[in-house]
Structures are given as C-alpha cells and as structure tokens.
Image 1 (cartoon, rainbow, N blue to C red):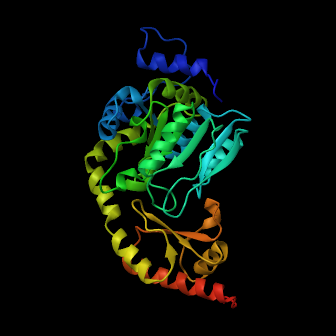
Image 2: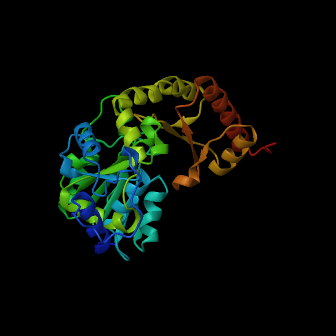
Image 3: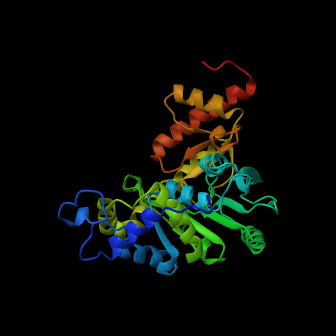
Amino acid sequence: MKNAFHPHMEWAKAHTKTPLPIELGFSGAPAPRGRAWQEFGSGHPELTRLVARRYGVSQSRVYLAGGTSLANFVAIAAFCDPGDLVAVEVPRYASLAEIPRSLGAKVVDIPRQPNGQLGRIPKRAGLIVVTSPHNPTGRVLSREDWAALGHAADRGAIVLVDEVYRDLQPRRPKVAATRHERFVTTGGLTKAFGLGALRLGWVLGAPELLDRIRKVDNLVSVQCATPSLIKLLETWPKLDALAERARRPVEKNIEALRASGLTFAEPQAGLTAFVKVKDGDVCARECERRGVGVARGSFFDAPQYVRLYLGANPTQFARGVQILARVNETAKRGARLI
C-alpha cells in the first residue's frame, strides 16, 4: 500500500482545517453545537503538542491514530506491498506478523532469545517490526540490538518499534523515532495507562514517513473521536500516576513467580512474563478449567510457553501461579489432567 492515496479525504481534511466562506462540497449533516462534536480532520493541535513533549520529538513528527492497533496497521501498510520481505521478531504479538501477511508480504522471523537479544536480521527485509519492551517477555532492546537495527536502516529498511509498554519502564529511554530517520515508533494508552476505551494512539517518525502513513490512514479512518480527545486532555496530567499504579504489583508478582519454580525470563519492564511449560495450549486450557486465565504461547508463535499478566492482584496472582505450576508438573509427568 505504499502508493495509497485518497484524494477526496485529503481535500476534505484540508477544508476542515481552513474552511471557505461558502462550502458546497461536503456530504453530511452539520454537527451539533458543542466542543465534543468539533472535528479535527488534520489532527488535534493540543494533543499533538503534549505527545511531542512527552516523547521528545517535534510536533511535525507526531501522527495521531485510533489506538495502537490501528497505528501499527497503517504504519505497516504504508511500507509494505505484496511480495515484500518483512522481518518480524518471534515470539511476537500476532498482529505484527498477520498485518503484513494479509497485505501479501512474505514474513520472515527474527528470533528473540529469552534474554531479549535479537537474532540475525535478514539483509533483504525492507520493513523490520519489533517491540520494546518486548511483548510477551518484557525484555528491552539492548545497545547491540539498537545498533543492528540502525545498520539495517542505513541499508534502507524501515524499522517499526512498537513501544506501547515504554511508559512502564522506571527509567524511560528515548523513543525509537529519535534514534534514526528511518525508525518509526507506535504507542498508545492501553498497556501502560489502562485507557484503552479511548482508542487513541500515535505514530512518531520523520515527516516524510508520516506522510505515507497518513495517506494509508485516510483509507481506513477519518479522524480520532473528539470525545476521546477531550477525555484524554483531562486525564493527561495523571498519566504518570496511572503508570505507577499499573507497576505497583509487578515486583511482588515476580517474586511469587520466582518462588513457583517455573522457568521464565526476568521481565525488565511492562506487565507480562513469558513462562516455559510442557505444552502451552494444554496448560492454558487446564488452568482455565481451574479458574485461572493465562494466554497460550501459540498466540505468540511460541507453543511451549504461556504469558502471564503481572499487574494482577498479588494474592490472586500467587494462587494462580501455584495452580499453573501444578498443572505443568502433571503435564511433564505425562499424567492425566483432571
């Protein structure tokens, strides 16, 4: 979709931004009066300024989108055509590979080791997609990983880094989009702040890259919802407090996970841990029968794992981990699970 273009939407958004005295080209009923019904077809200037300040970029490097999932879709689609080679980390959040596949691209794996280290990056990949902190392990990219991604960008690749968990890092690093002109950051409100119902996110990157993303977004989305924008502006001063609230149970839950005897990579940030088990699908199914919900590793192309949520109530988490450990031990012995 690299050459995507919607001329009518380009025209309509421009006219929304600078209306003419007599507008005869629009097709719908006038909006009711009131701030909640105002349209911002070219982005919301106040929110754009706040996002730019928080993430250390200029306002020209911010594109608002309808949540991180949509941000990832339009960003991947902007740099992906049928037959292109797209390299995606594994284990991975499934949509990061399914989006380019659905667009006809060939997806190749970049193995992500238990310590978070990236494996070899294919040299022919035109688009590289990773997460940091990593979903599902909670590991962050190392200095060596960033250097390898930079070398790939120097060769002409676009590097997309989903940093939706970044705000949960105790010492937040600079965003990927500030590291290289061919790096793009996606993010949003769900994972760190619990504000997923607002369905707001963003893409950060060089203006010429955002222009391609905007053209794709015009095919699938007109604008962000103004009531959500208003609510987010009211909530913005509380973002750090919300992230701190999300982090509060994490260390205690990691201690319970250590005590369980289960094998996992120590998360460095985020709200997830990836636990090695005999069979992720079997363990997830049997845990669910016992009232414990875990995400099966096959969702992340790693069937011998399950992903746990570290933001849970510590008492419930400790009980759930004990049940998971018993289920896994039974599965390893080959005994019948009842």
